[in-house]
Length: 198
Length: 355
Image 1 (tube, chains in turn orange, purple):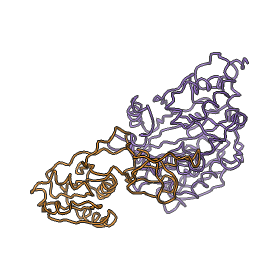
Image 2 (image 1 turned 90 degrees about the vertical axis):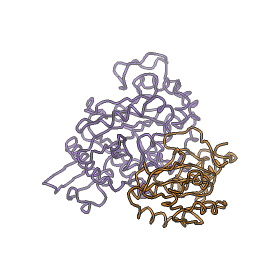
Image 3 (image 1 turned 30 degrees about the vertical axis):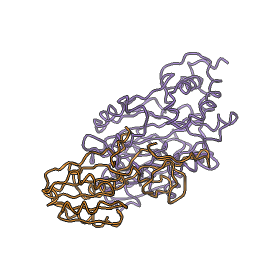
């Protein structure tokens, strides 16, 4: 099952919806991993005739099914970083009436949403749906380094090595949650890591 | 009155101190013997002579040393001062507001000479005498917001107003109570306040936003907020929390009176004329427990407030672990007598400690 119900949280934490087909001059899908299931669930031949899918598999096996939707353009890339230039170009070339669909992990949705907003896509034309891993993209508030796909709380910053706890405070500009040193007041006392939603 | 500027530090050896005058004018934030969040806004149109409310931007004995501390923070971490590209005009608005206010309110310390857009700014305490062209960034050594807020005590958030919300789109933040401008820049009013407990449920932020959106030019508002800081450390940033957090564990019953500081923010809100942005200066005042206890009313009241504060707030404000030790200390200054209403120390009328 690729769907997860997030517990209620604070106001800066993003909330996600369910992708639904909308009328548009073109349809851009940016997805990773199980996000493929959300696209498959809502795709129609009319939409895919004007559809462009940018997909990062992250070790999953949905590519054949996505290609079978016959989108006008399809790209599968190894990582968000690898796909980024293509995403920016596509958004920069977009015309009025583009509909954007973002689905998969929070890290992908956040980064792609940021790219779309910066390109001037109105937020009313962007839909999001979370699917798959609930891992988070975290920024260390101390060294500012980003650690991707954090599954446990606390975790070790992949840049500076501090032990960080996972906050729900989220920056859309950084597309990241905030990680803060957990043992500043008692160095070395770090609780055993557990899943973020355990 | 002429101000004698202290030569003091807010780090390392912490030589910061408050003179007797500074203690008497400290903005004690509790108007009654208990505390809960409220939209405690009032007009910022002066106040009692020599109080921190009297001038639009209060300048006190800590001015020169605070500006030195800010320069050190910025040298270590330039991300403490940021302005999104559309906020430059608001920066000029802020520069004008501060220069005009300070030169009018403290003519012995600051001078502003204007001939059209050719301006000359003299800041005597900091030894600055700069001529520049108003609205021309190339004529200043920094952007306008950074230039003027390197010369003004307190943090400054410059908020853009659009879509019936306020957006944290620029700021100079080096004396903050544990929040990050670099992380929060670009957020709206509800998002940057998201981590605050209890207040959302009480509707505080909805009402506060409604009030702030309607602030008019020439009618600034103000409120006080507070927290606790061990040692007179201005830069209690999340960025450096892994360095300063440990200081919270250095309190002992012997040193708590000198080391534990009540940290008060005088928050003011001014509408800016050209950009329609709102500037939100957050001025930090620090006072040690032992200095506060020289006002018997404040001793009685601080004990009662800290004792009765909900646990969530003591946790959020970061002193839950030290609260028992604080109460041991403060209880010695509470004889159970009633206190007069309002924040002022009322030294002439309040009875001396009866124990």
